[in-house]
Image (tube, rainbow, N blue to C red; front, top):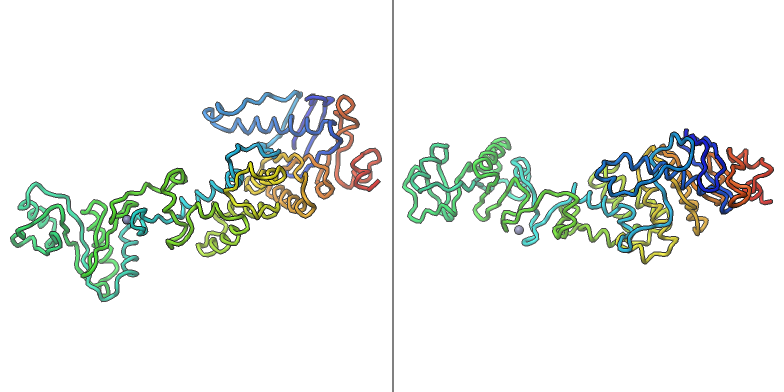
Length: 442
Ligand SMILES: [Zn+2]
């Protein structure tokens, strides 16, 4: 329970009030009656003060210090976030405000596929197991293959043969010309263009286990790299994320990589025609909903992080009538009503629980159908275990409230008092409440 005693912020007259947690609570009353002083300047301010206290001291340094509101006692207020009119920086976009840009970057970092910026081949970190799987796909069963590696150079060629023969290797290729370590080395023996053969086999007859063992051997002696040769082709593999053909190394995927130019070569799936991050940011919320419905089904990630976060935020953009907006649309180009709804989408689409959400007139300027969708999202937010406090006069919202608090009786010095608190049923039977008269159409 939220328990407030002796609140004297602005015009409030020593307010005492208990509010239930996990409910939708609506504050109403005429302009200047003190409802915003209690909701925003007392409850939210205190909730935010406590929320900021959960950050590390290093982060707190950058946050505004919030003074304790004027009150005898404020207890049981959960960490709070508020939605008022969007105050985003001019360059921030719909995707930034709703955090969809961040979650999409995270999705690419987790399940994206990198393609070489030079030759467009897929860039993967290989293991003996993944190479064995790849070989099954790219090499026909009856093909003869050689599993090879490039050995580190020795001081002189004669020593080279001794050292590697002792390790149990017999054959190699120098500039593509075969040689044996137990025979005199070829006249143009070139240590810089050299492969030693770890195994020779036919894919069909060889056991999977033997292929993997030989690949392990080759990678061990080849410094994490190996080569698989057929009569026609040499396939290069590496344990690190790099293109062995172009000698381009790719750092491990993290969300940070999207601040750099790599991002143009990171695709969402192994198909090189699948979208990169910018392709998705150029799509509208409606297009993305269709896209991800199919995509999350195919990769079987429904219900996992960050799939849920992406879907719930897209769904709220749709519910709030914003499905026509692309994610890279700057907030500064939106109407103030649209800006407000994007701000709402960012909290209503979030999956946090046990928070306090403070919403300042969430349905202001909305068509009834859009207001109904906002209400639906507010109720979902409550049903996930959050407390929602809204300053609101919208009839749909008032009628759906679990608890209503009305301020009055007048404005300024004539206000600052609670004139009603209770359920909707109790409100409808109240004789003095102005809100009750409004709901009864009097
Ligand atoms: Zn390449």
